[in-house]
Image (tube, rainbow, N blue to C red; front, side, top):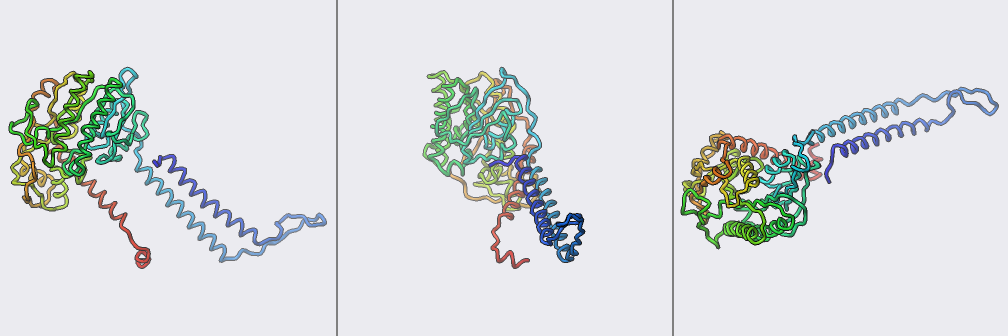
Length: 433
């Protein structure tokens, strides 16, 4: 149940009114207990008679005074709670552009409550489009999109895309899939289903309503590449039975399905091969390089590197990725496009950058390498530059600083939440009084 500001006000005012009514009733009942006639009453013979009340007991007066003081304090406390609850609710939605019915689109974002999807939803909403988010909340969180709850252009559907979906839309961004190794390895069969059956359902929906589809693929389709940097024409070097295969091969089949539907059913499709991305709203414990290093540095723990640290990665900030996805959707280009940052760093260099930005004294420690971990990963974005006029703009340190601040707040919020939820036995709580 979602508590709006109006509902909270009603609950608080009802509580205040109940307390006041009880106090007034008790005062009235105590006055009746004295009996007798009021001043100015008429006796049986029609004569005015003055009745003198017995003096009110001092102890009872003091008791009533104390009750009124307690009531006043409770009212103040309730008012403070109301202000606290109101402060947690956004006073208004982010600014949204108005679009008329000719320009406004109904856009479906599968996985729209996730890390990347929620940032995409923010942009589409502020542009004035109607956005429908579909998420099963395996890795997505309602908190990522809660600032849009109640907006007339926003709709959230709790649904697993492995099952068919029947709605009317103009465009579909298919982002639904766990993307970090611990998440997609947690249930490999479900990961494969999401990227195969889920993609079939999305493409079937697009065929029925005539919508255009953007498939969010991944740089993992290149596997542990023999070609560097990786162009879209490279077919990849993937282990089909390794621990990452459920995700790698799932995305490769997703691309195959997309172009099969395009050729056979004339569905309009485009494919984005997304490289390593970081930014706010990442899961704190998703096992990725960025989140691992930042959390360890913030807690002054050892920064663990899998292997010798010489393997390379290219990291892009999430807003650059979202811009690339939107530009690709609105273009007429149909072949796969790399969306990533071509600036390459070794994992060891990246750990040092994060440690310096956080300012801690964490020690960088090497641990055993992970099976099938790619040794080099760098996108060739010549195609994105030529056909989309897109390239990343956010410098690494600027993006990392924003991400570190987000993780710092999340860590404080997590610690505070844990303290609030510590179970204290009743007898232990009473012994402290």
